[in-house]
Image (cartoon, rainbow, N blue to C red):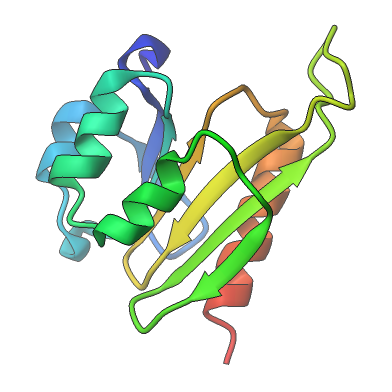
Length: 139
């Protein structure tokens, strides 16, 4: 992925434990019939903000929550999906652990949209996504 474009990583998941990485072009053409989409964005890049605001078909209130500069941890379930804003200790090399990092996540029946402002450690990030996604659709 070209992190400078605001799309940190994106996958179309196959429902069998795998998936394939995609870029902006395929993201723009994605439809739910192709599989569940997971797209992770850097909110400091205008192209990502523009996509979420104008092309993602997300509710404007969800977009606002995903793009907020200041965050407070929260979760909100709607008839369309689940929004989770999580914060944790900054474990990035050389960072002040008191300087919290946040991830904002939207989960619905066909996609997972996650947004960061600062880099997150991959192991922690993967665990967060799996926990939120499985909790959102557990019956």
